[in-house]
Amino acid sequence: MSKIFNEITTVVAATLILAALSACGEKEFYNDEQYRKECYIVSGDNNIFGQEYTYGENATGFLSIYLSGSTPVDNPVTVTLRQADHYLKDYNQSVNGSAFENYVELLPANCYQVESWSTVVTADNSYTLFPIKVNIDNLDPDKRYFLPLEIASVSDYQYSATKNYVLFQIYMKNAYATTKTDTYYQMTGNTLDLLAEGETWEESSPGSSPTAFNATKRMTPLSENSVRILPGTQQSTEKTFVTQRSIRLTITDEIYQNPVIGDDGLPTGQTYPVNIVKVEPLNEGSGCVQVRQAYDGTDQETGNLLYSYFNPEDKKFTLNYCYRMPSDKSGSKDTWHKVKEIMERLDY
Image 1 (cartoon, rainbow, N blue to C red):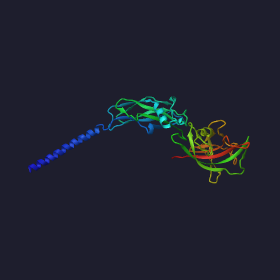
Image 2 (spheres, helix red, strand yellow; image 1 turned 90 degrees about the vertical axis):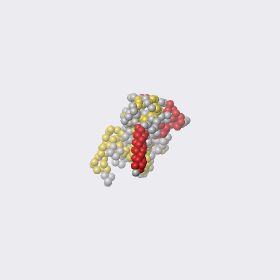
Image 3 (cartoon, rainbow, N blue to C red; image 1 turned 45 degrees about the vertical axis):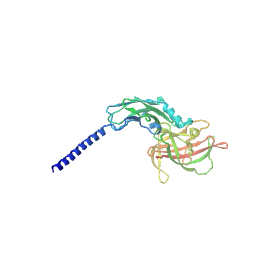
Image 4 (cartoon, helix red, strand yellow; image 1 turned 180 degrees about the horizontal axis):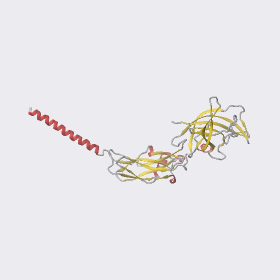
């Protein structure tokens, strides 16, 4: 009996010792760093990270800088960045090759501000944010701008050999469109061809009805309150065509009380406020589109003024204008296209 008791005691003691050793080992496992600590800048493919900035604002965007590992740092770690233009050159050559028209441009120095090139990772977080203030008002929405940055130094540990730099891409936006993705509007409306000789206007085909259309239209931001579109149902991504044939929409602060139309098609006597939109050519010249509000500024059927406007409630554009391309001729007369279109932004 004594022998059996001793054997049981030995087994229990061994079990307790193993359990204690296991607990100690587990504690040490979670207290010790299991991976190599490494500092890196968060980015995507080709080390690109993009940020949207809004026209009319000197706004601040952020890069995220992480310190990898399984345990917090014991002491604050200072990370210092610097501009490194050669990464932009390498990107253009490797991605775009001889297609120089697709080259990304360096963000101009007068368009951004970095208050401090150093930031600190503390024990409270495994990452820190690096602020970059950018003003996009003087940037070209048809160009891509990068600010190439790299880690210059880390006060402790080491930095990644592949994620030690970033191509910080600048996207431009306003309340109506963005360059981060292609912005499209669903467009419905109608068009009627007109002939003009001097101040004399007539229908191209007297008595004909306007031709209805339904399509999508791409919109590009230009400034805080202006955007660019192609007129009517024109469609193209060719740069020269877009430059010469686009029209500019400027959403003004001028308010127009638009009449509410009832189910019977007649005004109800009620109105609602909308912002008048100015419609004009994007550029002037012999090869550019021409634009007029309407061929006499009024609706030919009702005699009411034809306003173009933006409704801030439903976010819809209603446009009334006439346009003609440089080649629009019919004998000695100019051909104009009278357009009414309603545009509503598509969200994908």
